[in-house]
Length: 511
Image 1 (cartoon, rainbow, N blue to C red):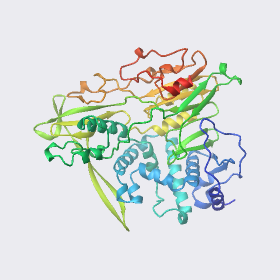
Image 2: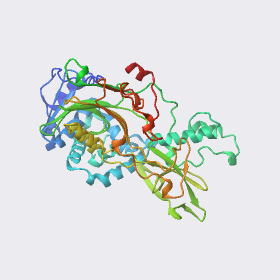
Image 3: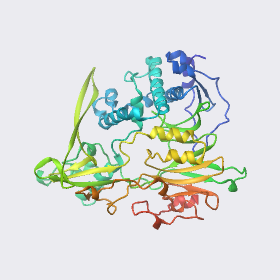
Image 4: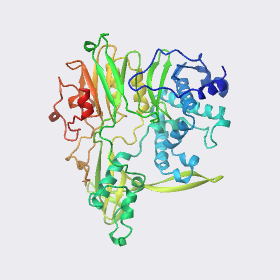
């Protein structure tokens, strides 16, 4: 069957069925193996075959990792078309070129992410680069093959750097939102609302009394406040030891609590002798947060909420407004100009914004005498794809933990089980070792290097429970102390800036 007719067949089917907690391996295939090669002319396309189950789940058999990346991009695009392009354009700062000037807000961070991904790309192992390159080529091949049915804004010139930018963070929107929220609440006497609400409330005030949003940095201007999160929203995972199962084998079960539009994508990737992984990916990239299993082990992710960052208040040098005082001297404030392009009728418009940085991190806010900067480990990490690929390839608990210890993924609980009968709950977090008490909702004044954190708590010291009595581990987004009631963890063993004990209703039901 030719690719074009296969695509037509796919459009008559429902989207792939993703069953939370259950991954199907034995559903009969609905069509023989197909290759996208005829439509693209790319050599990689001829090195991959795709079989879909009757539910539409793709099983991708590739001769190498580059072809695996190609095939994964292809099937995502078959099922979600322009949404895949949209996700990738947003992550590398080109969404304004597709959607116009009103859509450029996130492109400034995207351009920075792209630049960082490009400058660090050569540091990635060759097999990781092969997957990224293959995914970009798959995007381009599909765009060229189906140009007549895709929107005119869809490009066909993606690079591996564009795909790598999907897994690079240059700013922490959660930390920014928290800082904005705390500052706006203080300015309005604790009343909650958005920055825009706060500005509107101040319109009738004399100019000299207006404080809210007057000196927001570009970082903060991108942040929006969406109200309180649902305390019972989240995901669940369980692992059971062989002693608790009728099969005598460990069982891993997962319930991600996600809508059909959450951007998860179920697929099976196989490169003989290299990789055999079944799990969920994210639209727009081959390596964004995943869970799943290979022939020897599997893991599930559930959100956790560690305190990964600190906001430091730095004192300006009164004699030099472009510097701050630190370690007995002065340090210049770096200003970076970032330009993005956007669609402007039949032409292209450009807009430039200036972003302020210090060696400690980006400037969130500044006034006449103080800079407020964000310091967090999760900014500028570039090895996330390497970590995920090593976890997918691992065949033992030791190999899997060595991959997790790369720590490019700065948070998430990992619930794990393997063919040797091991079960594990790992509270994964890149927590800084603080030289001061946790700041909570306030900024810490820092005048020297001794007053800011410089390292993380070692991976081995993170809360984790391996093969506990009772033969189970579970997590429902609560801290790890009551993962297992036979062997609860003592919170006094852990630093003050680790999550505090909590046991909400989902966890109680789970236990």
